[in-house]
Length: 310
Image 1 (cartoon, rainbow, N blue to C red):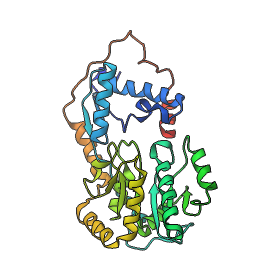
Image 2: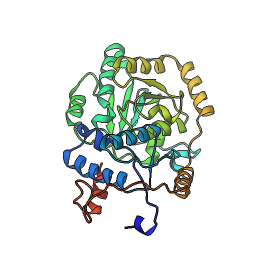
Image 3: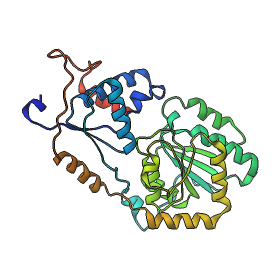
Image 4: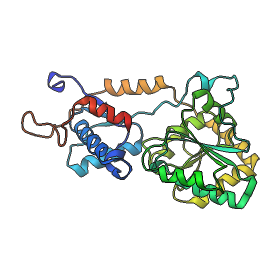
């Protein structure tokens, strides 16, 4: 209706994870979000997304479905956090303070985020280093299909005193973890972007990061990358951080000199520039008058709740 009145419709898709990786979601969410995605792709004048990788995935999906590919513009997400994280005053102590050197993983806990890799790496580290094994602080809310992994960690007497799973962490507490960790670590298998990597670099901290999907786009070679399926590589990088402080200092100096954080107003400016650009109309898929795109039967507020939950 809006397009018929000359309104340019521009919408954003962060990624297609619910649609092309259904093994990581409940079927009801995959079905609902896929219907929404197909509608967005067929009835938008332009689509915004958050990485070159996501743009390629969107274009590939359109071709596989036989859709005309809409113009897709990549905008970079901001990574500057609020004053509680950016100020010069030392952040207050959090509720849980590790007593050993520790690494931080900031991420929701679900299969895609690959905490299983960290558990396996810390099992190796505990076996090799004993009481000198560092701690791992996982900050995030548990999502689908991780209950068994969390049970293993809690019951495993070799590593359960080294792995701490925290949620409900305030920004000021997170600031303390960033400021005091040995390094951050992000093992995700698949991302539309990977904001915790950017946040870590914005704090000038050493970051061990998966080399999968969009993550290398964030910062070139400033993180130390690893294969998200290589537990031995992860354990070796953790030990190098512990055993080579001069190397860590040099890497963090390179991060401070080479990484420029993106302000959120810069993201907004990119969005406005894309909207103000030439409107390249795409052809609507022909369908009988009044028929909705395939699979759409729920009211818009249902999709909004579903996307927030996902």
